[in-house]
Length: 308
Ligand SMILES: CCCCCCCCCCCCCC(=O)CC(=O)SCCNC(=O)CCNC(=O)[C@H](O)C(C)(C)COP(=O)(O)OP(=O)(O)OC[C@H]1O[C@@H](n2cnc3c(N)ncnc32)[C@H](O)[C@@H]1OP(=O)(O)O
Ligand SMILES: NC(=O)C1=CN([C@@H]2O[C@H](COP(=O)(O)OP(=O)(O)OC[C@H]3O[C@@H](n4cnc5c(N)ncnc54)[C@H](O)[C@@H]3O)[C@@H](O)[C@H]2O)C=CC1
Image 1: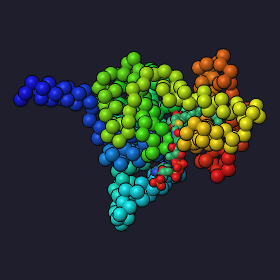
Image 2 (image 1 turned 135 degrees about the vertical axis):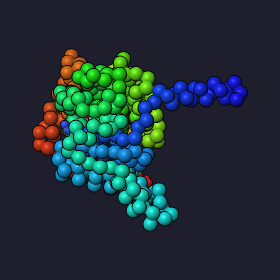
Image 3 (image 1 turned 60 degrees about the horizontal axis):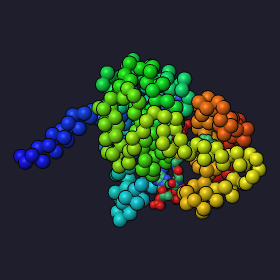
Image 4 (image 1 turned 180 degrees about the vertical axis):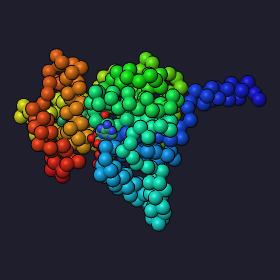
């Protein structure tokens, strides 16, 4: 073996040694994000268990995945549509569902949490899961902007805890922010980074800072848009048209808020207000609160800033 080959193979062996084998993944929360994460994991060949609060929600999660896969096969098997149904059955057979999170994590290699954006509820969940998961199981949160270190503190595995921030819609968006806290060890980080690559995503390395990279920029931008509407400076439609045609964004900030979910936006904004209480941009938005109080949560309920 040449010197270069030897060094290279030793390098690869070292990296591989630093990664845990992932055979089974548990996704907690089967909403917009959890269903997408379960889908792309199954598409990459992983066995997945998806957990949510009741069977009605889980049936909806499976229906979302099925609808997305229909769109995927339309392109993937454009030349031979007869192969589409078999592909969808194969992917769906890799995903099981349950309402029992303790049972789901008892023999899993990676837990990805994608439940409501609330620190107290996420901490309660992780502290319960920590007691039943194997010592080797890696925990990750898909939080948009809450502190990963703060969540990891309630477990006895802070070194096996990181952030995996996917983007909506998960099957389409290439980026995943892999968040490393000061306690996340190399094995955990490398395993999470490699998992993202196996999904066909592009992972980026993030520190555990508010909003990581993308939301640190996106949240103030979207908040400025909502303030413009509140001041009566511009209409949602004109703002969206402006940012699509003037800045080249695929969606304007107001339609993006409807797409993300106005309840999710409110949870995020409330968290930022707590984090930055003196910043005027993040004080609660009367307009956003009104929509949420009326159950107008954006696309998922058929109405938000726009009607669908
Ligand atoms: C105003 C209130 C402000 C409050 C602010 C306070 C809080 C701030 C909130 C911050 C939110 C942060 C959330 C977060 O943590 C991070 C995020 O995820 S941010 C969201 C990021 N996502 C985007 O920016 C999406 C931008 N949009 C797009 O890229 C496109 O519009 C989109 C791909 C969604 C749809 O494309 P479009 O052309 O518009 O529509 P089509 O329906 O024709 O789709 C095109 C193409 O894509 C396929 N496709 C779409 N969705 C799926 C899917 N789910 N599964 C599979 N395939 C899908 C579709 O089939 C089409 O394929 P063709 O081959 O072209 O037919
Ligand atoms: N919507 C978006 O665009 C994005 C959201 N995120 C983050 O992902 C997480 C989930 O967001 P969404 O999927 O949009 O929310 P969602 O509201 O669509 O789904 C959340 C799901 O979690 C379930 N759930 C709540 N508590 C639970 C518990 N204790 N056990 C099991 N299931 C529980 C709910 O029933 C619901 O189905 C949040 O942390 C959010 O900030 C991250 C990136 C983008």
